[in-house]
Length: 516
Ligand code: ADP
Ligand code: MG
Image (tube, rainbow, N blue to C red; front, side, top):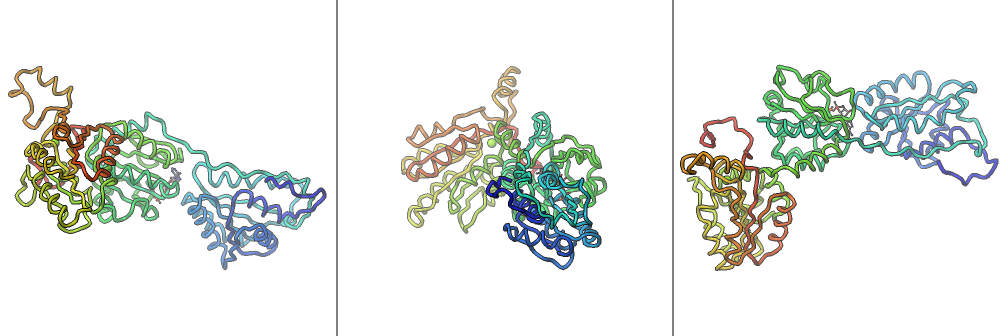
């Protein structure tokens, strides 16, 4: 602590030094029960601006101090007297250790001999130990006579606040391995634990859930990292979700009794676990993981997001960005197979009569006609509302020439074509070329394929509207921002996605069996 203001020869008590040292470590809260010899410590703590809460039992005080650690990331202090006071605090210390929550317990003990004079050094050490690596509880024992001892301030060696915990990231190869396991999974499940809450990774995790379309299950104290009312939350079907997942992404949770040790019959025998934790010793506990990512959850999930950006987009990524950037009150028109199905879950509607799609008859080709009608009616009744028409590439093909009509009447419709080069799924340009080597396209090209990388946006620019061809999330965001803010001009964003991108497998095959 850099307190150079003390005059030469000024005396300072042990209690004051303890309080000042805690303050220097950014400790803000102290809970406890005072008595000999720690009363002076509580008084001194108040004097330096630490909030002291006197409790009725050391155990409750210790629970309170540990919860402060979880909520703020800096340890709370629990102050107890020697003997029974300390013993009562043990329950709280054990609870903090088990929860991985930072905590410092200070206990008074009998008078010391000379050797323990260096005890103040233990404060930064205790703070570091409680918050670095896996967080947990620390105990500092203060000899009784130390508290009231007066020493010359100039003889005290003040120590600065320890640095915030270093942030560690995962090894890149482990990250790619995890990404590939998730990409090949059929029933992935993200389990979010309180380690994720503690690391404040909520923004990254929310994005990952959306971008990858991941179903998630929070543990009790991780509720709210992603809001409970998110459509991907499977908490209401917890047992089924655990039992059927083929890949589990374990984000700051342990496979202990709360998660049935990760073992059958609550989990599949062949479940692949991707484990992400800050504590190396935790990795591989009970279940041999398929991939291990050692690091801080906030940092690792950020790495995951960066990796996601370099991969071809899938439906979930596209709809995530659309959802973020279109107005809440727009009129949504949608058709296509996966495009319409996934869009229905990913794009919320907030008003009645503002969604038009393939309808009862499952008709493809209705989209542009519906969009033109909606734009005409909106012009007369609700001119502030935008019409946004989200089409699969095959669905767009049924009535793409109506783009000319849209431009002729200058209707500011935004058409988004989610282009996977086909009906249900398509081929990429390379696979297409390979396919042609086998002969006449009429005999060798799969019937679901359409011409790869078709520039549908040029139909829009051909008639004077704005066309965008986008391949990356960033290009998509820019095109969406430009076309949403331009309220005069019709536009078309042609979004290339991974031709093999699909929706999560459905349990009811008879509904989707025609989807090759
Ligand atoms: P839950 O009770 O929610 O299942 P647990 O207490 O079992 O959660 O697990 C929390 C895990 O989070 C612990 O293994 C701990 O090491 C880990 N953890 C704590 N902080 C971080 C962090 N910043 N980054 C990564 N893992 C963390
Ligand atoms: Mg398609």
